[in-house]
Image (cartoon, rainbow, N blue to C red; front, side, top):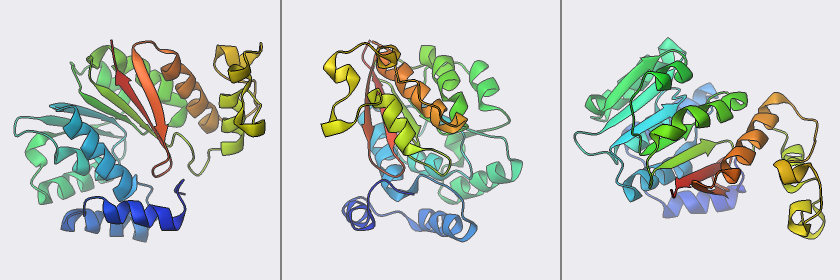
Length: 242
């Protein structure tokens, strides 16, 4: 479910760049199969980010059938590289098919298996990283890739606001310290609470807790500046400043 309402989402997509024929085919596949993907508004933003930082190498935690990788690949130079990771062999092969169709196969490295194992054996640096796998492993992904992201690099996390299993009201209570009246949080008011340590003690499922813990971790890291944008299902962008 997109964070933006239908009219605004359509407006954003209309103003943004047009997907090419292969991306439209990939969108149709997602619609037909009910396959979750970031969508063209987030895809265009990912490409914009990669171009803005002059990315040469990109790493994805969870690539599915290659939708986000396709957008990313268009921003890479001829000698660039994007590492796709996926535990489903059929999805990874479909990603290869689409990237080949778009002329990006030479830029792609396809890694079947656990993304955490792949990043451990992959040398950096990576200029852009996308975290889009199991939510309860987002913090682990950040810790694993953090040393491999240089100053000026970016880590993007998908589903930072919502997704099928994410309980947004509980996530909001966690992030704001449990106080939402007039948009104020306990952290804003300077009161003592669990929010001082990142988030309120809110009972939630592991997916929601994974996002809350991730946002707690990245916003507390002085080496990164983090913002959350309401595109798609919400994306958290962490820019390395030191």
